[in-house]
Image (cartoon, rainbow, N blue to C red; front, side, top):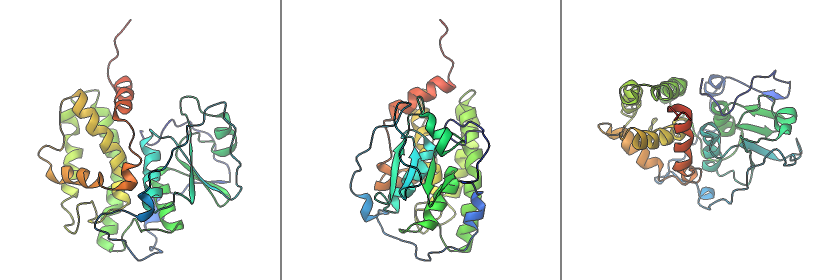
Length: 280
């Protein structure tokens, strides 16, 4: 539930690469150096990228498996945003090409020839298609150059896995709360994040330094914050100072800021999906 943008179940062909994220994260890190820049930015992320318009049903398919690494994405999808942030933070704008799709009018070739799951994100790399956003965060982290996004410290790795495993519970609980008493029903999961941010004191992020865990949560927290404020007139960071500081620090990171879209568009979509609509 609530694990991707526009999912349609279909059989998985042999060139689709799906591995549970724990398989990735429990490997010994290939790169031991964790970048610890005070500003949490990477040089290649400082230039604002010019974004191409989304491809619709009339668009031609880009060449497949021609040596170009492509991230099939949707600018407003929070799952795809996770991988977009990862790409930016590692400075891979010139190594991984964005291929944005219009999810309301998506090209038929995407399902037929690229990714039969017909959802985003997916990554075309080394003759295969890799799917699922949590898997892709770490796939990009392990297979491309740039700052490491998962620590080597055993305690941090263990807690990081716990937090990554909790993302679906967090998202599902908050989305479900929209149909009831949202403030009351979502309180426990926001408290979970607040408490988690107290675990390490060597930085403002979940594992101290910026990591894949922050990337996994921020696209959803960003949308939830706007929705709670606009619809329920509630600030869920009130009484949760660590969570408030975490959001503030993330908004200083270029790699994340470059992926943020107009909140009004999120709000309208969420209102239509989760709130009662007037009857004709």
